[in-house]
Image 1: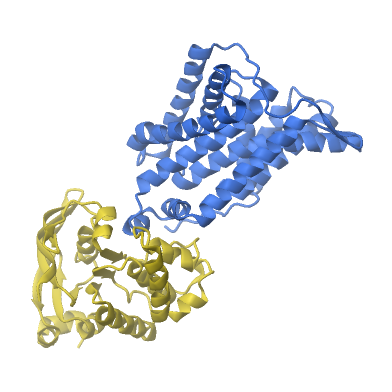
Image 2: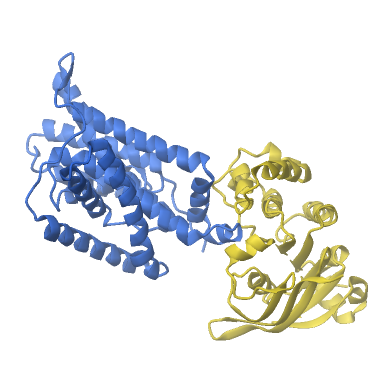
Length: 293
Length: 237
């Protein structure tokens, strides 16, 4: 029982990371119908920026906030410069552009920072927290907390601010939005900025666990895809629940199914994607897409 | 009355095909002008040209200023409220959110709050349903919502694209009654595009007939009603 609880708790911790990245994917997907394959590399690159700041002696939370601001601006610029020219191109074109972006960011990080793994600090204490026989890593708990804060921020932003409302409107009905005076192009750019910001949080929370290197997000991106698919690509809340679920499932399967262990864990993510797409393609909380023809 | 909107020699293309071949008309300040025409005559394209959604050649003057080629987002800020074909409802947002979006370019929050009350006065059903997703409203209610959304802008010119489409006659009559009320009380000029000529001619004080991208006839409704061709083609008697 204790092992079970322990695995659930650490599953929730990694699940929080998947949830953040899945949320970033869903945000862009909802606004533009694009699955941003470069989301993981954008997060990785942001984490390197944080690392550079920390190395220059900036205090952790200051570096954290500065990184979020830079990630936001970076995401915004990527949309304006790289995505906008292909905005009305077929989906496959945009996918290829995203994959190109992935390769470029990955190589750029390798070129600037080398492919050697670097330790990345956690803002939370090292000391584990013991409740009964279950041990919580302070970083795990902190990461869950930070993820929840980001979620809360996004919820309040989209639900209660005029800009958030305009962004939802722009995603839903671009023509009507323009007739309301909303500058739809900028809403999409802000969406990319916010997604980059959320991804940066995921990167900085996962780096202390997996160490910082240019490929650190590639596996996590696949888990994030599984999370978004499970929760539903049309549902931000679903993406978060999906992320936590994937984290827990992955850990439990790794622990209790002997032949999977840690080496084959990633297969679990792919299995989840395939099963969901076969059984319920819209995911647990997603709206099925109905198109009138 | 001076013209609030003046359109001269409007030409528009879809691909290589010209769909408007030099359309000219005017909407006087405070008046209700209607453009009648069958499906495919170019009515919707004309409205979309005025609100900047389609690229056009020709001259469009709004309040004396040349505005052709401007983006819809900017024309909205000049006071052109467009109620599009198919109503343009944000179906997943609530009724109240739809209305808030109508006032998006405005910064005078207090006045927006008052206008929300005022708009609810015209359409009490929308107040009752304000927390409902707009997609759950009936067709008539969505048409009311679309007009209310455009009103939240405090427009000077209201463009209405076939508000009667797909609605029961009673609902249509109610909506047109409110449009007339809005025109009188708010001094909003109206450009109405309609297939339902009978009801449009009742409302308007000037009418144009559009056929395959050309204005073929224009005049006050009383005169148009006497025209044999109009009676046969649009009024059905």
